[in-house]
Length: 390
Length: 164
Image (tube, rainbow over all chains, first blue to last red; front, side, top):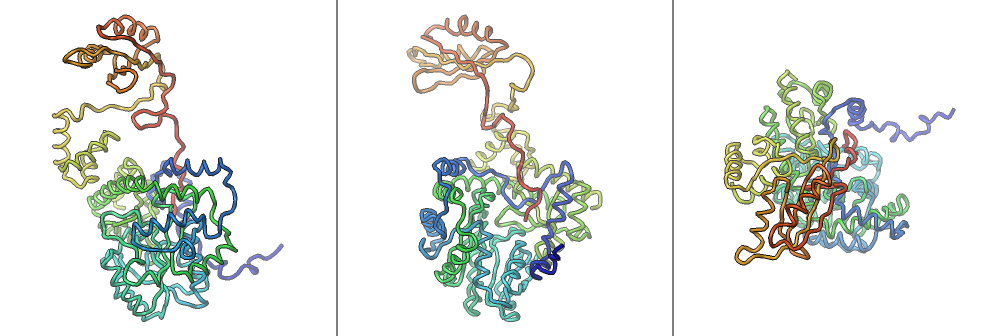
């Protein structure tokens, strides 16, 4: 018998499994669970986009593409970024089509993190950044976000974190998963000043950029001179309900994108061609679908925030994504206890905030990517659970 | 309530008339009273004409047949198609009457217990109305989608219960 544990790289062996896993295992064994724990749209990819993917298969488009992705797709993404954010990226050299936003994040970290480099990660945040920074050989430095700031990264917190850690790289997502918080353009400008002052590079995960509700949202890369120090990560998963197609992109200064492209060409070669063809259809003719889906999310968002507050849970207004992040500290339970009890006794699945970082303790993430009647039933169950004393 | 909000309210109700005023109010960021009042107004002015379930009759035991009948009409001076349409829609077995552009004029939807029943309605009642030139009857064999709702069983939610 080979002793694999002695062969495994300690970094991989000791990587903690996602805190979500245990809940998933528990919830998966139960019947009649209403899940508010899902981090992806409940919509199916709009039919015209699926049809474009099918048509690509029918035409026999089953080959590799250029490593950076189909030129037509890169051009379409470039047009979109210019229209949406007045950002100009050259389809040749400054854009890379990746296998989901996730791969683009991994690539960016791999080419920007040197062994031992400290990387700032505001938390609570998406679960992948910390392990990916570790795998890239870096040292994650968490920047706690505060509930009284609506879990938004402030310039002073960023400044202090940079000074204290000496970090030269920040990775964050805006709009935020799990809090739904959006840092608006005015606040982005303040962050940009800190980044300029300390020569900070940023991996800006803007996967939820299309799902914003009235906030004055912009890309970090369009603020001041940030384009030159930002790797912008976007994708099709959330906006177009295309999670399973695994298609994202990175846009940034040529030297970074070129380096990422080298890693990508050896490790991944290219993103699946049929997904790329479907993505062209999505970005060129799917934005109306996005607007309709966002309208629907918005109505659910208002309902869930109203319902949560009505049962006595404080909940700040989520400005983007499809998550509400209510404060459950009044129950006296930890996030994990609350989520477990709620699942077992009321059969509603939410994700404990602490899974997304220590500052998420006392909060839970409720996804409203679920039909309104499901949300109504979930809120009724939650209310009953709270009235029964948690 | 603004006209835009009213339209949102109507779309929500058209999709699901069972949403409570409380839920509608939360979704639209309006008072419950405002929602209730607007719904009453919309009912009063005839914008909302009723609330119905979307039924898949194929799943219900028993005879029931639906026919779509194309009707060509000679329009009458002064009243156009309206008088003929009225004569048609007064029959209780008629579910819908619409005036269309194209190769025929009125589309009539008729529901009956058996084919013979519908056939008798067409030959004895419909075709004999003055100014009706001709009829073409189509019997519906299977309904796939109605009022935006697919009647075939879809796949369940394919998503994992919890994902990051």
